[in-house]
Image 1 (tube, rainbow, N blue to C red):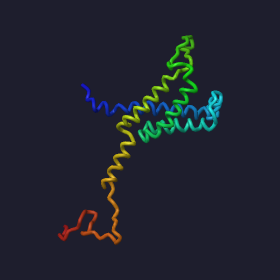
Image 2 (cartoon, rainbow, N blue to C red):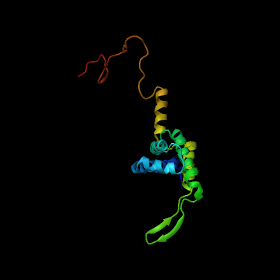
Image 3 (spheres, rainbow, N blue to C red):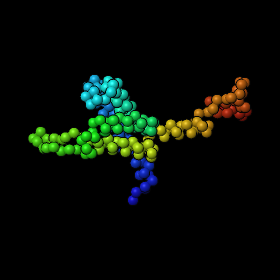
Image 4 (cartoon, one colour):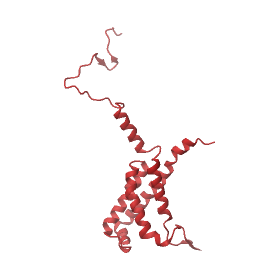
Amino acid sequence: MFNFPTVQRWSALPLRLIVGYGFVAHGYAKLAKGPDNFAAILQAIGVPEPHMMSWLTIIVEIAGGLAVLTGAFVALASIPMAAVLITALISVHLPYGFSSIKLQAVTAAGAQFGPPGYEVDLLYLACLATLVAGGSGPLALEGLIRKRNRLLATGGGRPRASTSAGPRTPTSPVTARGPSSTATRS
């Protein structure tokens, strides 16, 4: 039915796509509304240095999201991303409980929801931990970088430069058609 190793190999890709996109979307929304607006929110909840933290959060969300999305330096990017999530969990979402969906009422204008709890923060943290522990999976820049470094370390890929001090003297002349020979060409 399923080729489990193949399914397992590709399982990191949907995590990378949703977590990366989610962080980029949240960072871009803060940037589009203006870092000063986000700084005012941070100040209201008592975060120290709200203007600096506003910019740091935006940078972490956009750059970290792009790193996860492309599968580049995921373990390194996950550290500040986890810090942002834990800060949001403690300073914003914890008082509202676990559930991220709190249906208050359904009116003519549509569904009305209460403030979200920390459920989504935990889901993002779990996804980041899974990507760090299990790897970024296929189509990740990390894999391409590792493969390139392995090729270069073993002498594959690019030809190595000569280490001799003297001029290079080929053992046989080389032309555009390949090695020359003493045979007459017609």
